[in-house]
Image (cartoon, rainbow, N blue to C red; front, side, top):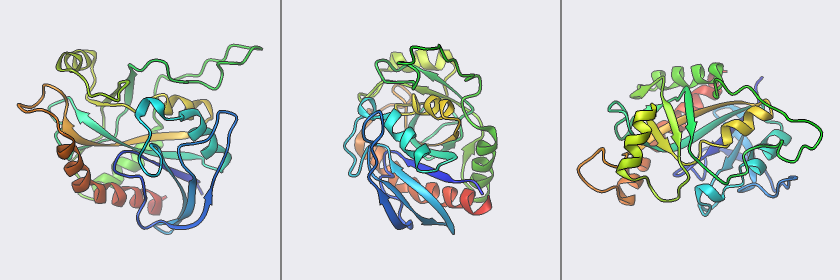
Length: 246
């Protein structure tokens, strides 16, 4: 049986319904993870939960210790990671409240510790990253979204920007020209690090606002928080379906 971990993003710093039996305060060769790893029962399955931005939410996207997070989950026994991300919608299909299970990504970040092999003096290590997300895990998320009656896309290119500021309208034009359908700030290097540690990894993205220039008004935190509040129950139901169906 697959050992699942859930990484909760903005709006999911706690997994309500998780019956916690253990909270692991771990340390790694790369420092401490964002928060303790909570282990317990959810949807009838043992699962691990980690709040990407800390508990409470305190870490900006470029300050998250992604290497420590993924390493800690691997050491705790995780085999597959379901990553929840709040994103902006670029493609016209990606309206507020829409779900996307991306199949590819483009990394626009800089200065993040993005590999476990940076200090390997004995050999240069390259991983195949042609398809950054686990297809079997994507298939499970897609089936769960369909079962929940959610509006979703079973494809999409995730553009990962540095943050913590939101993008300019011109930057979104560039991302769209590059082929991005959604934009977020935490998809990388998380996905690549999971691949380096041979963990299955897939992203459940909830669109919480139109990207810059995609609506008449300005983007507000009130708008984002409202979308998160409206969509978080569907997020949890989708995760529960994946766990119970495996």
